[in-house]
Length: 477
Image (cartoon, rainbow, N blue to C red; front, side):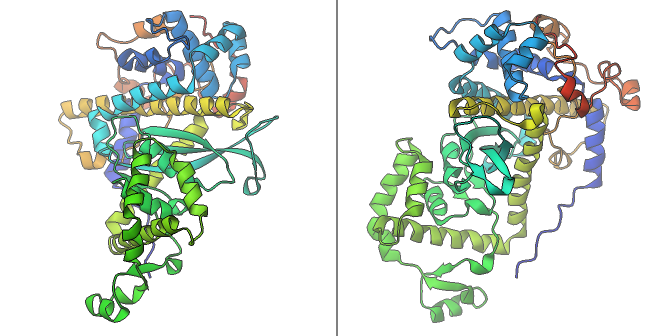
């Protein structure tokens, strides 16, 4: 019997520090945040013309790209954004067609994730060696070509699988069929990681704990560390007779119910290594391989050997999982980071009640990556300004331990405005920054009132989301 983990005991000083740091952070509209972050990372330079021209992106082109990114990630759409900003729908649609593609979105996300990985505070959150994946569903409407019915969601839904690092950055996003097993897609973006994150360990919820995944993760030199459930139904394997195992392991021996077939795995070992090499070096798609071998019968020798190896790796994982509560806590904390970013994505994707209307898989994938880009931008910007706030406190002689900082989350939008006026004026926004390219932290007198120079004049309420366009967003620059 494994006792459930109690809620993580977050130190009281961590909660107080979080409130104090949040009060010091500046308040910024989402467009201003993106303009400022581009000044430091140049992620907009990744949006090259489809024709292959890699020229210096003009201010006007940057404005148009930012308008498209905001329109797609917030779910406003190009038509509503056009009405709000004074830039014609044709210009925005042309920009979307020729600049904003999955390829360029992936490159821009990689730039932001790598920038975040280099921040000192990000290393306090985690070393970048662990990640997790989970699915998130969005309602869809219209004549979508890629929207299977999902009974539990009471309607048509679209599902995305995102891969989140222990530093709160998202390095992978994939549209998946809601009726398919999420386990089939766990390896895709993990092996396709193009960022600087040195990810070696991956956590999932119970859905990812399949024998095929356990085997393939180990064969490519990585570790799968899922959160387990229904442990009484899991078969653990042994390498000897029950009598010998009971002598060697008096307490754990009786739990090892099946004999591991070593000869089967040894006979297929060269083929298993070739399969792993094909996956690791991109010669085969992981989701196709996982789906194929998961459905294969035990009469298939290679499938049987793969599942046998998976049983051994699952037993090794469970031995540590059952005996080490710190290990279980580590897995739960990482999965909670992914859940927190689900909430941030829902906040960003607010328009039309979060309902996706784009009909084609390619369009849906582009919109999903736009949302991931804005999520990463928020996380990076929040981490940067948390760092500056911490430096300010330490310069005043305050002791701010890294252990306490590790409980602070940059995955929220409390200091960011998505509603009301959306002004994408690149030159004007850059002129507001100091000589080092930063916004000032909130003055102490405004922190005491809970106000900033911006939100002292503008209130931020979810109810304003429905009137965002009517309020007259100025994107004309």
